[in-house]
Image (cartoon, rainbow, N blue to C red; front, side, top):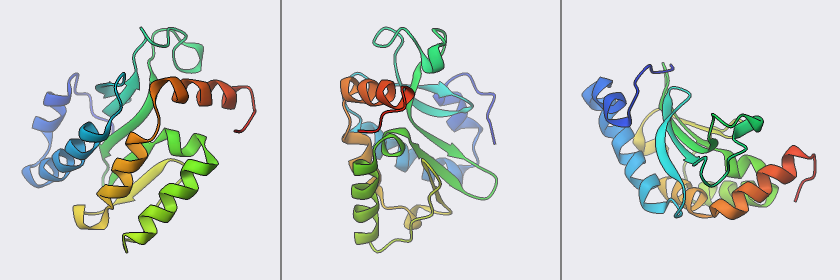
Length: 153
């Protein structure tokens, strides 16, 4: 469900208390692990973590008005979702993330970059924190540009 909220605070305030607690816990883990240079903002109706335009003026898909998305956190109708773009861009990071997640004993429900979970107990916060913290802005931009040119690392 895409939110029309303009700020993260507004987004959180719009959530029912139970959902707000889950999102706040995951958000806290993300913010603690987030490498320097990324910025938290509302992005595509979700809490997004982006490469600011000041660091990558080309913007996402060569649109200089849209910051490059790194990760996101959202409440969907029947689940929560954490989007990990860096894991999607790198086969090595994806395999390591999957290994760490499975080691946690939790069941991984994942699409290309989307980790879905129904409650906080279903999510491996350690694996998500690792994924968030693993890619610097510089390396993320390099991976993004390499993938845009069709070259895998």
